[in-house]
Length: 142
Image (cartoon, rainbow, N blue to C red; front, side, top):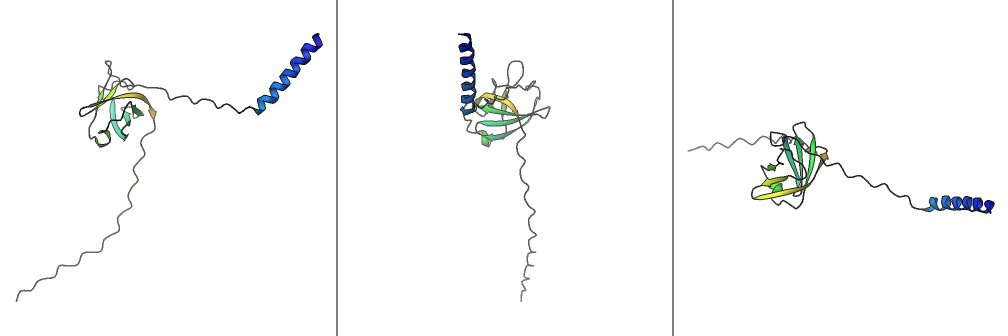
């Protein structure tokens, strides 16, 4: 009886190893980026910002770190905004519980994570030199 138990255990392990090789590899779930907060946002803690679309704003803090703020709903005037306001928490920090104020809209955030800076604009090639304009014809008066 003891020999049968050991043999069945070895057979079970061998079969398990064989089937494990046939199973599709489980992909490791990608961890969501960690939520962050910008301290002292109400005391010049935000240096600049860049609108990506009507639901995304890139924010640069005073330490020159960029953050990606994702809004809960589209903020329709955001792509055309020249100025925006940052509604901070009572402690003055700006995080995923904060909002962006724009004209008559208050756009609530759902996420604030570290980000890369926005892409730099491509420089336009220098314009070809235009040929000189012809000199105006002098009108002779008789």
